[in-house]
Amino acid sequence: MKKIYSLLFFTLFVTINLTAQIGGRHAYPFLEKPVSARIAALGGNTAAINDNDINLAYVNPSLINPQMNNFISLAYVDFFGDINYGFAQYGHSFKEIGSFVATMMYNNYGLFDYADEAGNVSGTFTASDVTLNVGWGRQLGKRFSIGSALSLIYSGYERYNSFGFSVNVAGSYFSESGWEMSLIGRNIGAQITPYSTGGERDPLPLDIQYAVSKRLEHLPFRYSIIYDHIERWNLSYDDPNNPSGGIDPLTGDPVYKTGISRFADNFMRHIIIGGEAYLGKNLILRGGYNYRRRQELKLNGKPGMGGFSWGIGIRIYKFRINYARTSFSQNGSPNYFTLVFDLKSLLKK
Image 1 (tube, rainbow, N blue to C red):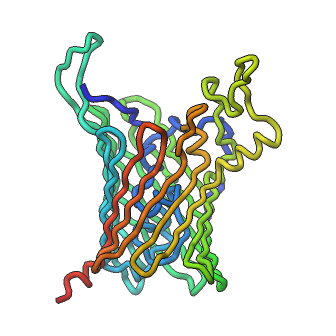
Image 2 (image 1 turned 90 degrees about the vertical axis):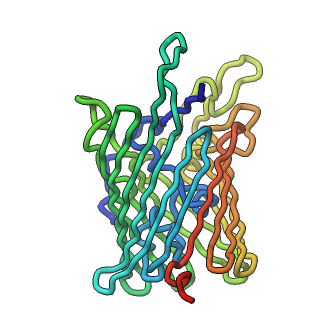
């Protein structure tokens, strides 16, 4: 019998929710997962990098521009167990109204067995999610750009189905000295129909982010910093089986962080750090660190590489190939693959 894994711009001012644990309380949690290999390698699920990469359009629509016209991107993620997901993207520009990127994203959770309490199997069923996203972006002079994206969401788990929609809005600023900054509101929307008749509608995983990046002038390196979940301060969760301060070696009691230590811990849960090293025109090495991911998934005494990520980008002929690997825990690490190419350039003789 297959193992069953848990299925799990500024008009952004919302009421701050100070509940402790942020996971497991929202519909469509797959919207929070990175799909692009480049984004995954940098440790998060957004970016403020204005280098005409169509993969960034899905998470930051203010980066959509005419240079993405006729570009296609295909992404695949080999997640845990039988779970896999990915997307297909296409960009097109119109002189009068701006540039657009359409994204079709899917999530496949594999094949599951129907079984009763005694373990008797009586068939199989599937579970999946599908999202159609259309993003729009427009330049407002040399220094500013804006963008928005609408997603239509379908989710089907066995005989339980749900429909919803979400909107991403973003604005970016590009300074003369090379700083690139974005304010992004993601997953602003609603669950239109719940999974069960008469059931309650769950909120979407709202996330307001501030991202900044800069490429160094005298070194072939770009760093990126993200402040995640502006709308919520407390991202910690006090797990009695895995306390934030460890276990007291004398009493065996759980120890929890307090005061400055707790403040610093909570602040760092908002921070995601990434970097790219450019080794010539055709090779890029990437790495990232997500503190909150590490704190939530590490085991006491065995932290491993949880929270770290790395990747590589190469250019072969007219294709850009990106690969990334992220460490969630010692049980495994997902693999991310992305292929990008200019359709018009490829079809030229």
